[in-house]
Image (tube, rainbow, N blue to C red; front, top):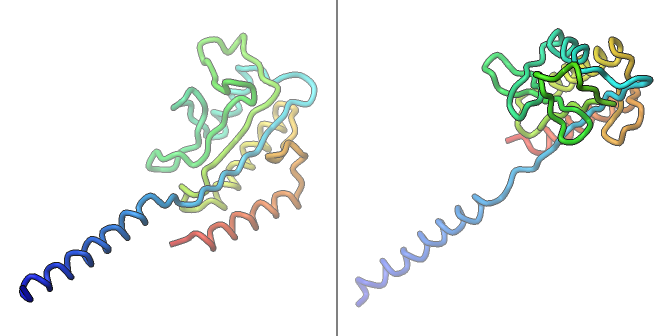
Length: 165
């Protein structure tokens, strides 16, 4: 009987180790999103003009019928949708399309360099605002000020510091 005791003691340890791995597996990584809006000031953004600015800004039409900025490997850095549900763009009827605004968004937790992606998002947002008479707003739809941008950068830096592996 003493010969059987050591395997019985080892078996629970192995099971405990496995159960530790199993309980660790379902733990979800923290997520963080950044959203920027560009709202039309006088007239809604018209489809053809908006799409031209987006394409000239390096955006690509694609998955989910919205626009994306992609990295060199084709991975999404950030996306852009109409601010009106369902948020999609129908390229076949741009002459009939208009929107009071657009939203740009990124998944910080999926990016290697989110601060650079934020700069790219702001660049596209500012270009749309300048060329189509709009205004850049934050996630609460308040005017995006230099202080707001700095606060966003600090939040990103804190998130990266707390959650980097």
